Image 1 (tube, helix red, strand yellow):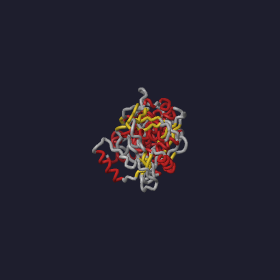
Image 2 (image 1 turned 90 degrees about the vertical axis):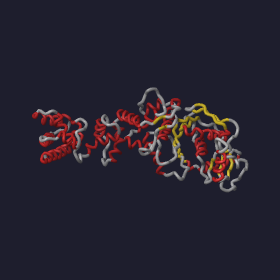
Image 3 (image 1 turned 45 degrees about the vertical axis):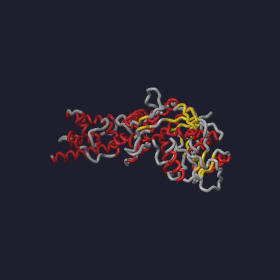
Length: 466
């Protein structure tokens, strides 16, 4: 048996972190077993669906590195198939048409709440054998009324519920659109899905769906319901992949690593590459208890991933961020060297980019505290002399930069910091940067000289005002 799982989101405009983890668990399960990961778009709710929302799903999965197998199935393209299955079930006495109005149903439910702990449909139309000419109607599933529905969940264990507590759920709405409960079973059968891994909020749905599988004479897939993720809220924007990706400067490896471990146990190991996750993932390791979302832990995991991810891969993710800051950067050796240096100082991709901006843009101003502490009457001469030494050098490497520094400080018997800090301010705008040799080299010879002379003029103007 080839393992086949599916991820079946509804296009709502963003990808919730809980949905992203469901997608990841399914993808890991499929890849671990050498199986197939299918993508289905459940777009039958026409009031919520937009193509832009569908594109968000595609883009997010691609960013996460979760490739799917085969073509994408769109429920909106299968309406005729759902109608055919519904008619078959009606003909076999396993479903029926219902003409009860919305107002009548609301009144019945209200009355039942006063006398029972649940409010199921009372079966008014269950045995009327209404035909297709009965007027506006829905199609309901004829749920067994005796016995127990049960299944063994791969995560939650044995689960059962009395059929008497299950509703004759609606399969097809008045407008002819299928409900989730109905379409999901028809589609999972068509796709030959072997395992369904989803959130535990779907447990109650599973009883309805298993009953429908049986009515269709089909063997249900195995079900596994993952725990909820607690602590997600909209207080900082949106509990979505897009929000955390942008706000936290996430690598996909960082997000994947964190949400995989948020509900799945594997010893004391915390940091995994994607290959390691595929090799280690076992559905039996998914916890029953809900996981608590921890922003600080997500940031820490992301930082660890930045440290172990190749510079070439990092480049793919920082280039769009640079572009959003108005800087066009190309992949190559220069960018890789910059990333190798900056990732040891930064906690996330945003910081890498922000702390690297000095390479591409001269400071628009100088930090007041840095200037006050490090600029003095000799700063103008020091910066201009250092610029002269760089200008006279025929090479541009660590040795030539080091020689220019020594040629300025040694005759004056100065410590390195007395020159390095004014240089940092001139090049970066503040007395903080990577190593002084690296900072100078990355800015480039001509630009470095230009910034040094501009800062020298600024230092002179300060002295003139003193």
